[in-house]
Length: 324
Image (cartoon, rainbow, N blue to C red):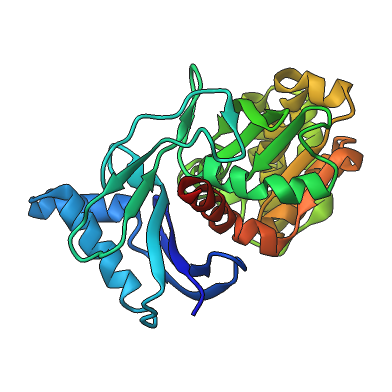
């Protein structure tokens, strides 16, 4: 049987464990759990004991739901597991961060219940920002992006990883040189659930016209002022609540993307690429926003399969380098 690794993407809200063939990269088994780092950490706080042992027990319980293989050579863990609320806190790697896997910081852990090395991967920091997990995805996306025109020899590129905390990552000559985090997804959730705007919006199928209207408004007025137009849209019967939901989304995504001109001017000036890696439903939203801002021609949209397995490919890159 081919050698395999367990690729563990341990985020704040979910734990994804995949068994992957080292040579082919084929995912042969997968388990997804809602035992994210935040949940496990809170349970550990209530029960106490050795934190690494507690987290390892949770990981083992998820891995044991998979078919036994006997071919695993290592367990690789990325994401929030190396944070202050994770299995063990590790120091961040610094910038520039090469995407060939050479700059990854890691710790080899000796954990009971695992008879193969367990490797915990750390994140990356700049002077005023941090990420954990996305750097592994970026390593995995390197070859995909290169095949679409964003290679090491190309002009600077901007990688956008949308989500609760969206990341804009500036990449040049095969290395991350800077990045910024935007609380786009989290703010959208808060505004639609707990703010005065909640009664003016309601989840509905994607409304491209209302969304692009929101993008345009975000580009023409300050965001804190623009947000109140969601309220007046409802008060003055300008948009019904479903369309207003997507108008609000357009305001936030538009404000996020409108910042590209300030944060990555060289990407725009030097004909660089904007690489968007997201599931289809989120990718569609960012595609519409980039089109509305006149940036659609620069956009490279990573297909769903590559986006989903980016962390796996990052783990494989690191494992091969580690073992070579």
